[in-house]
Length: 132
Image (cartoon, rainbow, N blue to C red; front, side):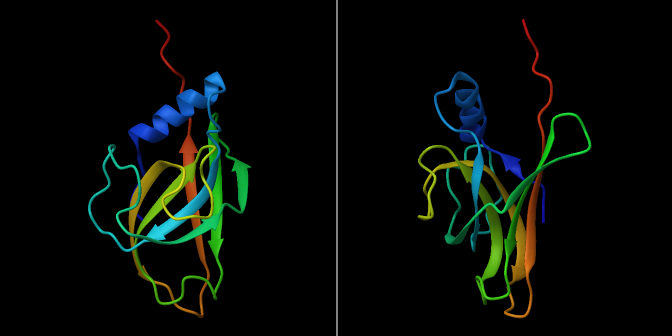
């Protein structure tokens, strides 16, 4: 999978989370069939076809690092030609397509078979903010 592009709406969600205005937790991973290049201005997947609740969160080995994990079981999204992956959070995120705030989007090229599971993982590191 390509690198995940963090979106402007995702950065604003993190900002709102610090002030208590919204929940910045990544709660859903979505896959789609759109293949346009990710952009910081993206607000949803180009063509979302399947969404799954995040399975687990693990603190990484580095300072500020978190691993967000979702696993597609063998019987999920069978036959989907996955071209994009998105991560969604915020108070409005739900199991409905295009709900919530798109934190990040990346490209992925694989047709999901019914004989395989796929581990999707976001490795995110929060860096020190500059104070002025």
